[in-house]
Amino acid sequence: MRWLEKDVRPSVQQIKQVSDKLGVPFNYFFLSEAPVEDVPLLALRTIRGERKPSRNLTEVLLGMEEQQKELSSQRERQGFGFCRFLGGGVGSHEEPKVIAMKLLERLGLYHDWVFQRDPQQRFESLQRALTKLRVVVMQSGFVRDDAARQLDPDEFRGFVMLDDFAPLIFVNANVTWSEKLVVLAHETVHAWFETSELFDASDELRQDFRDWEQERQVYNVTRALLLGSYL
Image 1 (cartoon, rainbow, N blue to C red):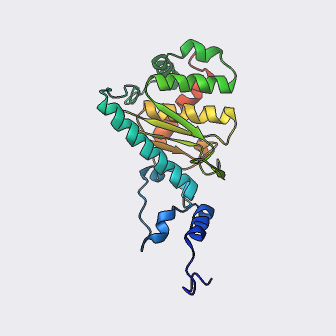
Image 2 (tube, helix red, strand yellow):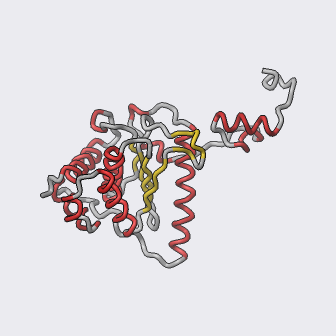
Image 3 (cartoon, rainbow, N blue to C red):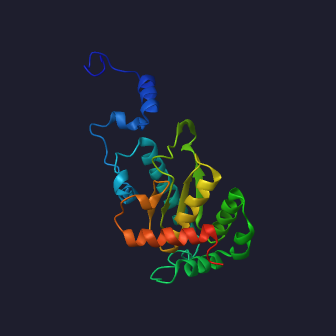
């Protein structure tokens, strides 16, 4: 209270402790006004999930965005072409099972995916296939290297950030392998349709969406991928 009343000035170490406790960047305490953090992906959360985002979620989004920009610039300088996986399903009105089959063929996973039943193996197979196509797949259960700042799976499960050279999928690691597989498959389908997305639910079709038709298509193709209904 004496800090708020300006009777006593906190030390740098005390400010650092408050910064760590609240998850607020240290340098923010020395600004006259808090900066506006523009995180476009937050606008894609479902309507029911419009509570104020936590510092953990905001910092993960900003951190991944920064890493993506660096990698994208590096790949462009090195002469990499655009990631051709993005947008492979744009404009498609075929049955979900047909789209799922074409997606898996593009990933080179068709036969492997059919016979793998262990969710961790399926996740890792999909991750390797995406990596070969230059789609970055990241997963973590906390902010940066701070294990005390656990990511809340009730707030978000994962997201996909589009980019011509370095599209990025992030998976919240604080869920089971089965749940991580669903998230990775879901975000893979979004990348195939070239739509950014923040996945913040365990059962997405029970929520309200800004684009129901798009999400229904993604949901149905994801089901086809996971349940093998393309066979």
